[in-house]
Length: 369
Image (cartoon, rainbow, N blue to C red):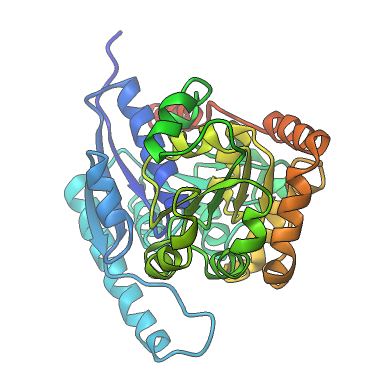
């Protein structure tokens, strides 16, 4: 039987942690039926407005921004931007006439899903974190299904709406085992030297960057080579600092070939965003996590502790990073047994079929609506 062609909105973004899962869901929907019409809705000026079109999908931007955590005059504009975004979202839904809406988190998902539910469009929330944000808690009452990545989420959401799906990851990460030869060549690195991958998320991480920058000499005492993703803001400073180790360190503002980076890494240093952790579980390498303190409800620490408590990763707090990171990293590099334990345990937490599971659930909900 030929399946109907559906119109589906996917909304959210802000960071790679929201954007890449959204694109993975869109690709899974297209794999089910190439004729499904997918429209993304993001926030103007945010990363999704560049990354989504590059992945081959249409996107419309809302004039929404988040509340600043500290006092800022920008917060006085928030109510006006929210009202404007709700009106924009209402028009998008009226014009596009979606069969379903999927929210992946980020500024735009709140207004879009709220207006979709108000227009009697079935909504699916993809909650990536072990501790949900306030927007998804509010939207849960109107959602048809809430796809989660962690056990025990009935503490926050109606149990009958929950589906344990995991977080979707980039398709090219699902099989990295045979990519190391071309990856070493791509980065210009030596396959016989231990490789450390340092990533601070798609936008970079100042504390991690500063900790690495001030301790480069100590780091290279361990006889390693490094791939360092800095984000745009820190890139020039990092390049200057790394100049005397040019052959042993490869500095990138953003790494587009993350499958290559993961394939050559012996140890990974990373933030603890939900999507990042899902990717690390798929990749199955020993990790040191440094949760960002600059996120709502401190959810990165909760994400990291879910791994630490099962001996699947190590954690250094952001506050202790500059004093402890390099020592912890060198200790891990010298402990082969611990590396093996961490790699084995983190791999057990992987849920590789997440994007397909969510896509199939979206279609199922449309058909029952």
